[in-house]
Amino acid sequence: AAMLPLLPLTLLLLHSCFPRRGSSLLPQEGLPWKKTEFALRLYHSVAAGENGTNFVISPAGVSLALEILQFGAQGNTSRQLADALGYTVHVRDFMHAVYSTLRNSSQGTKTELACTLFVQVGTPLSPCFVEQVSTWANSSVEPVDLSKSNGTTIQTNKEESEQLTVMVLRLPAITPKVRPLGKLYIWLALVSTVTFQSRWQKTFSSMDSQPLPFTSAHGLVFRVPMMHQTAEVNYGQFQDAMGHQVSLLELPYLGRAASLFLVLSRDRDTPLDHIEPQLTARVLHLWTSRLRRTRMDVFLPRFRIQNQFNLKSILRSWGVIDLFDPLKANLKGISGQDGFYVSEAIHKAKMEVSEEGSKASAATALLLLKRSRVPVFKANRPFLFFLRESSTGFVFTIGRVSNPLD
Image (cartoon, rainbow, N blue to C red; front, side):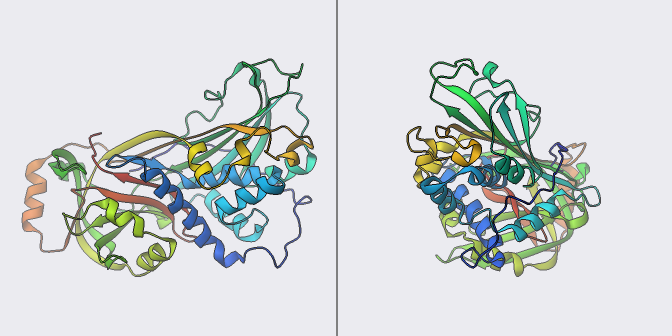
C-alpha cells in the first residue's frame, strides 16, 4: 500500500473578506483542467533537470502554497502568481468543493491538504488576510518564535508529513521585534502539507512477489522486488501525438476515492522521456475516461522515492520574478506594509508503494505467470505514476520510477 501519515487540522469558516464573483473570473468548469495543467507543468519542469532518475512531486502542495500567497499579493506580483497557477483563488465554489471532498474519509482512505502560516509573535497581520487564509483548504495561522530558526530548517509540528512545501517570507529592514539571522529577518513561514493514507482495493499477495528483471532508464538490468496480482483493473492502450504507443493502468485504493495511475511505454525501445512531453490535461482526461475493465496479470515493483527541490528556480522560469525580489515583491495584503518577499521556496516529497508483509516467493509468481491466459501489464522498465482523486480528477502526487532500487 502507499501510506502517508494523516495530519488533522481545523477548518474555520469565514467569508467576509472574499470578493464577489464576477464575469472576469475563470468558469468553475475549467478549474479541474487548470489544476491538472499546473500539475503537469510542474512535472515537466522538474523532469527537465532529472533525466533518467526517480523523482516525485506534489503539485497539490505547491499550488496550495501559491494560493495562500495570492491572498496577500497585489499588483504585478499577483498577476505573476495567477499566470503561474493558471487561475485565481477568487473562483471559490469549485475550489471549496474540491478541498471539502479531500477532507472526507471513506472506507479506510484518508486524504488531506493543509496549510499553516507560522507567524513571528508580534507581527501584525491584516484581519482580512487572516480570514481568507483560515477558510482555505484546512489552513490556519499560528504565532511562533521564528527567530530561533533559519530559512531552510523551519521546525514545525508537520515534520512527519510526506509531502511538504515551505515558503519563508522575510523583511530586509532591521526591526527590534525580531532577532537577526545574518542580515535578514524571518517574519512568516508558510508550510503546506499533503497527506494520503490508504490500502489497495485489491491487495498484492506477499506470496506472489519475487525478484524479476527491470531495465533502468540507462539500459542497465537489475533484479528488483516485483509485486504481482491477477485482478479486474481499468486498462487502456493509446497513441500519443507523436505516435508513441502507451499503456495506462488504474489501481484503485479502498473505497475507490483515489487511484494510482501507471503510464508505461508499450515499446521497450521508446524512452519514457519521449512520451512525457506529450502528456497534457486534455490527453490525460481523454485516456482516463476511455479505460476499460479488464482482467489482467499486473506486475509492479515495490518502490520508495524521496527527494527535495528548490522551487525558486522553477517559479522564476515561469515568470514569477517579483515574489523573490526584496525591492519588487508586493505582498502588502498580508499586513498592510511593504517589504515582505519570499526568500526560500522548498518542496519535499515522498512516495512509497508496497504490499504488506512482503516475502519473495519465486516459485509461486513464476507458476502464476506460466498458467496465465489473461493480458499482462508488467512495469519492468521506467514508468510514470500519478495519484488522483476520483470524483474531481485532483492530482495529489506525480512522479517517475526509473530504477526501483535507487
